[in-house]
Length: 496
Ligand code: 5AD
Ligand code: SF4
Image 1: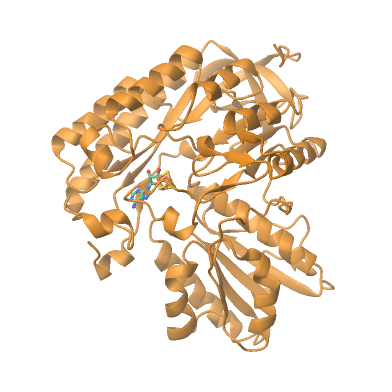
Image 2: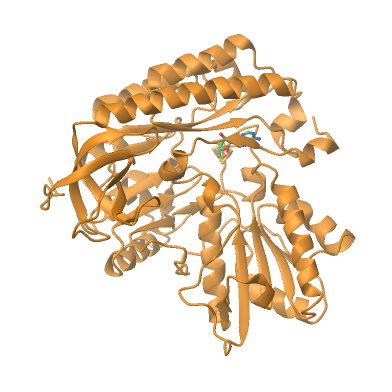
């Protein structure tokens, strides 16, 4: 059921502050709307300057780096000051709380910048492009170009069109585009951890989700191009890669010459073999697709981090069916049991939606009890928000009152905090290997880095350096962070 007013009331999410550390795929609140940082600000002599602001999930931030690479080829330098830019781009997310209002507000601000810089071009990229193109381009005349997530290669041509005064649009979705050959310009980076997209789109059609409509059909990138990118990152000093996809377990590549297939488990193994000192993470797994083979591969390689993000969405089988998740509560719990059997020390996180259509108090209690059983380390929690065009919007009534959704979300958040703190407390007294990511946010005397299980650790800097592995004795914790002291400099061999 679609209501015009709901267009303005987009996804509402509550994320405890700790999530900003565990975030691999989903939205890192502290990064929303950040501008792509150049290594050095485009000089006065750069022929043209571009400003790119990004919203949404990690894949979208990665896309901005692909866009930056395409524009660099065209001679653009990056700037963090929109007022200085010849080209202002906003890479949008369709799932994000208040995403549309934020984008519209930003576009109004950019429009006023244009008053002082008549030849400045403003463009909308990403997931909102398709749905908003008519309104932004033709009705409100807020932007000069609109480019969907599969059309970034056509940016130079679209910019030329816009420069000649035409409205430039390409929101076509592709079945093939993976940007495999484009090395993203790694900006806003700590130089130690990097994200690598291995596939695009999603074929799953969960009824609440707009992604299959905004990002199109699923397609995998060739293993050779992924390996090349990861190898280059390692050579540049990076020590951790996170393989990204909406549903990494359905990664599947068939070599056009040999007809040989590569599965996700095989890809994971190939990336792990690049170097034992390169940590490998991945996100997101789908409960229906994650295989024992993936779990055994994780177990075999010490450098594949023991951490799985396994969105459950709801603990009630009835609701899961309405969501078209294609697994039951019991099926999900079996998967979690399998993870615990094969990987006894594995971190586990999830996504949960409160108040999906027809959700009763009993369904909600099933979500809470499932959380107890799974003992999650972390969760991203959302109130259901009806998205225009999705299957749920067409089929079901968004009938859980707002206050009920809010209260249920609050209960889920409280449960998550209790479980997360308990899991943090279990770490106290252990020695964990940590990859140093850089100075801690709170004190320049401390470093921070993550354990294999994705928990953030803060410890005194001493003579250690970024990108180094250290063993840390965990001496205390908050709900968000472990505190510790480095105990020895040599770490156990990464290869078994
Ligand atoms: N309402 C609430 N949450 C949503 N998500 C996706 N679509 C919606 C929606 N319409 C959440 C799901 C998904 C995560 C990426 O965002 O939990 O796993
Ligand atoms: Fe959306 Fe479901 Fe695909 Fe995730 S798996 S992107 S929730 S359709």
